[in-house]
Length: 371
Image (cartoon, rainbow, N blue to C red; front, side, top):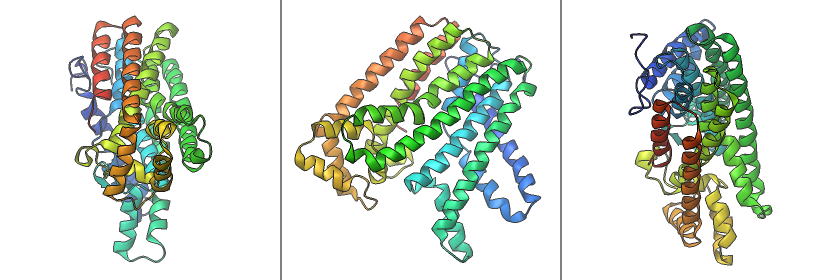
């Protein structure tokens, strides 16, 4: 590819970036496959699972990172952003593999979740022991591997880009490291809320928003934007604008995800209907519903939310409560307010014209999606 060709344009914010990141990921996994094979050919399923899991996806976080760079005046063709984007995808994959295991999810993107994939491998090979326990162990190990790989790929940005010096990479790496710690803490808070939320209903809505911010929102938009700006040498006032924009938009993005997790079309989301309800996720939808639920509605939520055997009738009954209590409407209203806040922050930010146009387009992509 011509090194002067823009990786993306305001009208096509993802552009060539997605394909280049996919090439980087494919090549990196091939390298790791050879390294693992040097220990034993029996490690091949790990590399196969990584390659399958890393294929496709929206590449949202790398796109925000790239436009954080571009909006701060960064070179449109800078290839170091491909490495950073690939690192973000590896971290995202690691988090999802572990998240699916924690939640006991059966599918991800329309395919078996990693722990289910390895459990099936155990059964087909007729190995000894518990297939599900083997699947869980393999998923933990693969998630850990991809977490390690994310740091390795990030470091290569300092050598692969002509326009990014080592000091700026270190500045961005500090954001990357903080992001990974925050997601781990947010994931723990999510687990705690699922087991304690019904015991402490007071403040449940605010706790749900705290989980959103740290488990998902900040690392979906804010941190990638700030990473891109840091790589471009953006001044602190611009990074502060990125934080305001990214915090609001990231939360709106996750609220849309929560709505899709309950009301989305499984053919588009790649997850079974009502899967978030079976997993017992204490989302803002649930918190708002319980604030206004009747005694009978609250009892139904208490008995059916988190039931792994929840059938379609049960899903529809819980959906009806979320609608009838006004919880869905309240979340949609909050989502719209957050989008408005994000647009106001973008309007006030000192960014390039191309960056402003692309980031405005990304607001729509992040919050008006169906999958």
